[in-house]
Length: 306
Image (tube, rainbow, N blue to C red; front, top):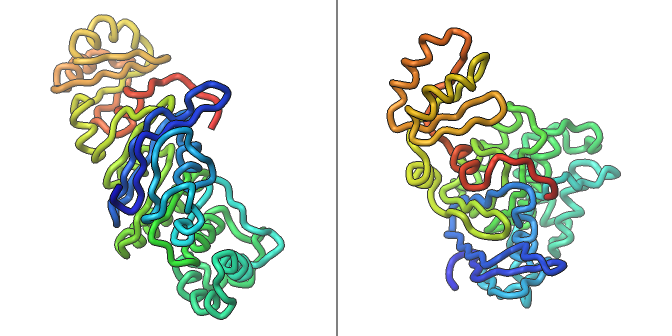
């Protein structure tokens, strides 16, 4: 297997149930690769296997040239990980969190201290080096976790929902930081529930569900392949009647969910024209996006689990 990270035929079962069922993944150096799926799709189990924290029942993994799980520790030395939940030590300052984490990779205190100025600058925490973790905002904590993942100067970063819980300003700042890492030539494996985040950042992505690969490729190419180019969302009083009389007839594909009609069209003009005579209805006309693709492939029902 070639590439910075490769997996072939990954399978994992728990209690007789297939959680990961025959996944193939390969990352090219310097790309951002998204792993998307609803709760319970198998993303967390896949990440754990790729890092050597869980052993596959079947399949092969190579992490930076090292077979996993046999030599996972050697591969992880050159990997940075940003977990879903901030696991910073609240008893330490910003500086101390970075120093202690560096020691886990066998770095001396002097080595980590030499990297501190750049890490603090990257996280925009130069003036907060001696602050306790409790004094940081949510955005500051996430930037610190990202900076901490860079302590060992990794080639590959695993980012597990890195912007969950952040406000829009903090999310955009995190995206800027991730683009900077990509420009430096680092490789990123990203999981996220924000489809706009995946569409903005990912060069390629895979959508999985029930442990199986549903689609893989460049975001816009996948959207163009699976979804009609235009979408009209209609809601308001009388939407059911409009859906039955116009939506089903005009759209290539139409769905009614709750009080909203989703119409997927190659030409939205007739549908938009029909709505001009229905003042009680409101609508949004937009271009098809990654969320449309995700929902088409995985469904709209709520999921429990991680």
